[in-house]
Length: 385
Ligand code: NZQ
Ligand code: ZN
Image 1 (spheres, rainbow, N blue to C red):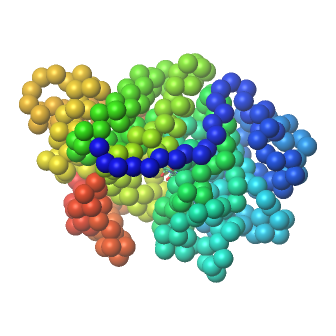
Image 2: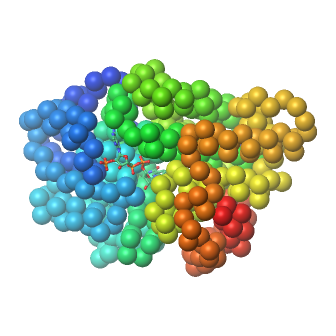
Image 3: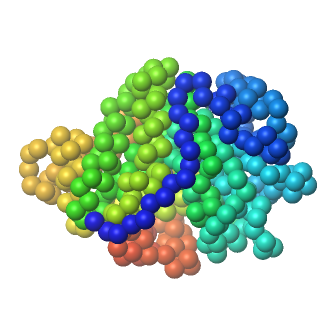
């Protein structure tokens, strides 16, 4: 096992009817900016619950943060923060609203001229403007981590940022919120969380027995609850296990002491930037090709995953590893998620070259050994056509 340090300061408030606890978490003298997305919270009652809990607090609102949070929209929110002397941010939404809020937390204290530099120059935020979250969509884990991904339509870029100052102070997780989530987004959430675990697990054996078991338990739980979550989102037992699995998949715990890959995400982000494909779906497109291309270096973990998650007991390590990739792709299909780029766009010619060009310009070497070069990414994306 590798050496590690672990600190996660986010307070989690989990369970039924917990949104009312907001009033105990936000300082009474705070000037709050309440941030939300396209308006789903106004239809499903979450907005009303939040407003009721904040009755005695000075609240300004900023709605309209789109899925794949857009830099230009966030710059308008930054203006509000500055003109209204906002002291506290509250994100009510899924990963996009929470990530947008993290960007604002960083940008509000950033003293450079162009906040986009936070993303292009990898500026870590040591201490941002404090913020809390009310999670409305289990998927990204953003509610308990310090990373964010921001999109800029103008340049068709989607870049990651983060830093120890960008953990939410608190996050409220009421699994009942999933009852209003469309099927497509439920499937996305299951796929995103599943892939988050894979990115931190499907590398090479390093003797981190406990982390492997943590990771496998999250994968098993997602596989177990997925059919019920999709069929009946009012099933509280399935909803609560789904929500907690998504949070645990990317709150730092399972990545400690082990190598991490994340190439699937980096290639996937480009597909969202270029075609607007939902984040989770880009991961389902990239995962099978990535594992086939990197088969030799990943086959031991692939086989272990095949045995423990998909109960594959027959055959050699290679057989089990191949079968595990097939099972993974079949799982995505069962969720209703297509796994080829051509399922989403007819305009895919040249995508692989464009991704490679971008990675080269950024001087990126990806994967758990930083050995995946732009030329490799080009071949993998092409395999995913
Ligand atoms: O905008 P509203 O009206 O809120 O509707 C949203 C949006 O259309 C809707 N929704 C959310 N909660 C709902 C609901 N509809 C009905 N009922 C509810 N309770 O769902 C749609 C998608 O929301 P979004 O926040 O975009 O989804 P998700 O949580 O999947 O977030 C995706 C974003 O997170 C980034 C992705 O790249 C993408 O930009 N990621 C962030 C990560 C992180 N910070 O750690 C890691 C991930 O790998 C990922 O990259
Ligand atoms: Zn993801």
